[in-house]
Length: 149
Image (cartoon, rainbow, N blue to C red; front, side, top):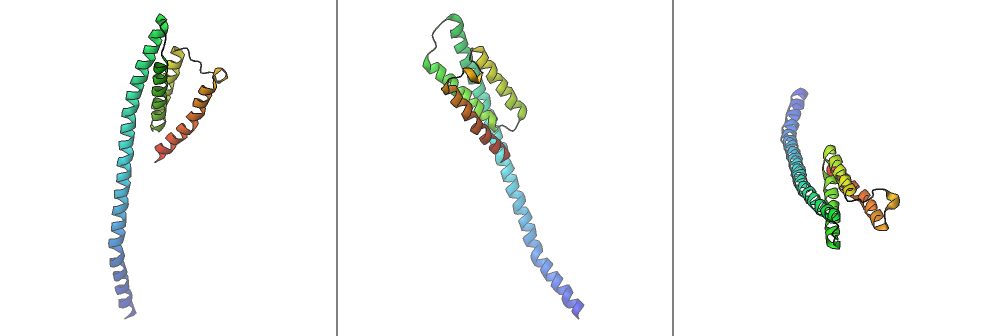
């Protein structure tokens, strides 16, 4: 008689737990898929925005370079626009999960600075550029954190 009660008890517990366990696993898988979908969508949007920012950066850098070559003055607005687009490209690149894209973006940025004769040597930077360097650290860290989500 004890064996029958024990078997009934096991059947009852198994019957009660199994649906809850199946529901838990299903809900977990759905949450994981939604998270993966959000991550994929975020990366897609970031890459699209980065592509546009790099194109803008290239166009503005070329405009500044041409003005330098022909000896035309460069307006403060154009310098500011170039700086803003450069910063945007850097910020977006920090969020991309692809190391190669981040390195290529950094190489393009360095080339653009060198093309315009802007020194990348920290010793020659004004306080304004030193501030930008300091800003790069938290932006990079935020990018790392966003990539890990």
